[in-house]
Amino acid sequence: MIPAQFEYVAPTSVDEALAALARHGDEAKVIAGGQSLLPVLRMRLNAPEVVVDLGAIAALRGVRDDGDALVIGAMTTHHDVLHDPLVAQHAAPIAKAEEHLADAQVRHRGTFGGALAHADPAGDLGAPVLALGAEFVIAGPTGTRTVAADDFFVGLFETAIAEGELLTEVRIPKHTGWGAHYEKFVRVAHQWPIVAVAAAVRAEGGTIAEARVGLTNMGSTPLRALAVEQALAGRPATEDAVREAASRAAEGTDPPSDLNGAADYRRHLAGVLTRRAVLAAAGG
Image 1 (cartoon, rainbow, N blue to C red):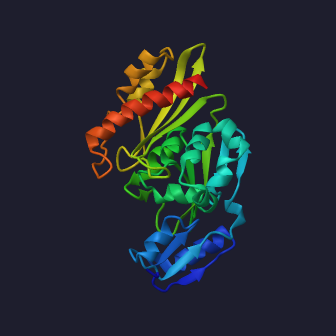
Image 2 (cartoon, rainbow, N blue to C red):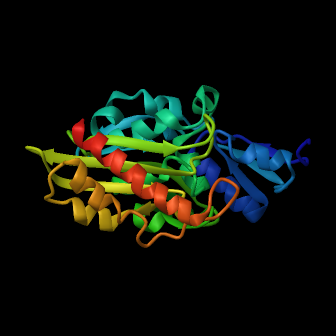
Image 3 (cartoon, rainbow, N blue to C red):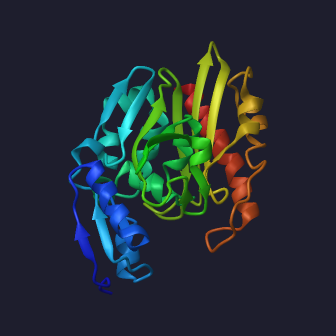
């Protein structure tokens, strides 16, 4: 199906983009890589009067070191995030998740910030970003503000980004030296995960000093497996200890039931995948 007619705007700065959004209000839609919006437009599930394309804003692309944190521009492609050595060194769960995100074509077009702003609970990036305690920098008509990951994901396809605002960058606290793994369960390659788990583990002499675990598709937003994290702290990185802690992965979750699996099946998967992810992260 062909999308409904719309006006196309391609600003070259954040200020120009914000001005365009202010002019057109809720009649405007922002497009980043287009991997989420374009299918919606083609199916005419949404028919904006104006599409504001962020692709020409160079300032929104790239990864930089900012002391205790990495800063990833919202328009940085998945491909560039995946292959950036700073991400691999200091935020490995994100790099691990990017390996499993869709296929090469999507990774070359889709953007890091666009995927997070879309806030699909089955999206691969929410769990690792949440687990690492990221902060989201949002620009609006009155300036910029920073929102913690715990407060960014509000509901199903809903974030803290308000009308007339833009996500400009994501700040990731460095987790240098932590082991990392992303365990994703799908029926076919490149599918949205039925359940996935992002794990970051700081191990000391065979003991888990600290662990951070994020869950994908276990509720209307990405979730932290806080009960697992607490149960792992100070425990040996053994199969039995990790299995016992991972059995608490589904606590506080509300997974969906759909054609890919019932809620109880997802709860079971969460425990299995958490055990695998934590053991893999603790081992490397």
